[in-house]
Length: 431
Ligand code: SF4
Ligand code: SF4
Image (cartoon, rainbow, N blue to C red; front, top):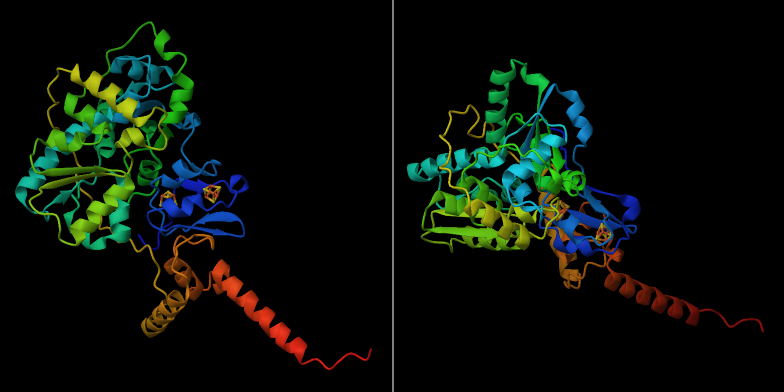
């Protein structure tokens, strides 16, 4: 993973950035710096959580997703709507209306990711019972959280379920069905995910634990919403397209995955700051008697993703209401080839201070020295999120001590004193 090309969805729109430093305070992996009045994302640290997109009032952070023109590349197009998709439309109170709406946008078929969630739920139950994964087992459904653990809490990787995500499971099922039905070749079938967040776009373009994604592209829920918002309540012929059971549909909401598992001793945590708090407790061995932890980076779960439209509480309530009406049993669990991760996660996000170990030790000592001399207020006015980060940037040659306004003031006062002293040594003028 260290040497391959990184492909992030979250990027900076440089002209829109005002250098206000708001985003640096909220990035969970300290991946943003503001230098010369503009933000910069440190590629190797970003987990594509989308937190900076939510926080930037100037809309300078954005997620790159595919456009509808991606459909032109395929003969048969399948939409894979995330469970959160169905919470977005205030006028539609039936999944089939929303899924029919998707077909109107040029898709030949719609396959709910909630079907994939059903399969992952069944496999997760098996995995927990085998006891092969260190308890408590942490869900791997949220790609931002898996990257967060790999970056900041690597010792907890042994708790993470090495299971594929619902969108990947759904993609494999949808593709197999389509090949059988149409007789087309794999590459003629386009499987497009309708995504609530940038982390899932990155998981498709640059998978962490899979050799290759089953999905060909990702269009944001926002872009789909823009096209459908005004026409969805005017659909005359609604097709019966939904087939997922209630438990799969509820995955969109915080707690949905844990409830579907039907186990008693679980923690369901949402919002990146809360997730980090729980992971830190687990690292400190302070979580006991728990079998499963559901961790979702966005507040409210996937309904709170930064590429959704509806308020997450409203979407949550709508999904709950519609899901309660579903009286279907979960679908039979098919045999899938790609249920488990097929490559080891070797995520080395933070380059060492130096390739040479003894040099790295010297630089670490210098870093601590610099840090001790900084005000330790973590004010962010230097453009780094904390004084520790500034000390590290200085040692890496990416910042100067005088980027700290307190250090700059000290330096200016010192220079002023020296100037005054020198001036006092000047011989009297001829006049
Ligand atoms: S929040 Fe970050 S990206 Fe947005 S304007 Fe401020 S510094 Fe730039
Ligand atoms: S997407 Fe998340 S990790 Fe990446 S820069 Fe933004 S806040 Fe930081």
